[in-house]
Image 1: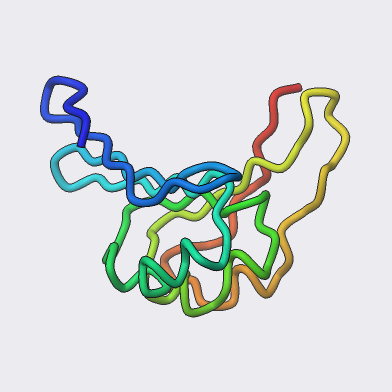
Image 2: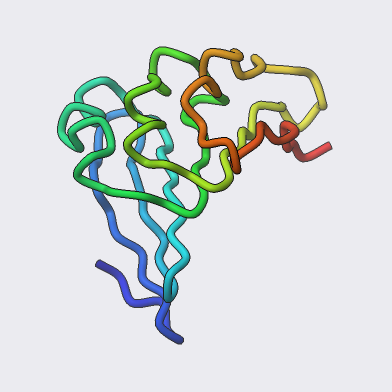
Length: 117
């Protein structure tokens, strides 16, 4: 755990060859950042059950369905799920599949893709 000050903490949940799964926490706010998540990471975190509910979830790999399975999203129960799947040029890398959003709670509607254009 890394204390970022003012009660903000960053936890490294997994580290792999492609990246890490990070959890940013401040008071009751919890943001899960699965950068480079893979199947072993999901299994290690019991498909999100070991993490528990989060306030916001960055969909892994731009929303690529195999690393954002319905069980993962159902266990995390995010209030907001978002995807960063645009390249800096503005061209789409790949859009999230509708199946990635199938287990979102009714209060968590799909959001627009965010990119740096």
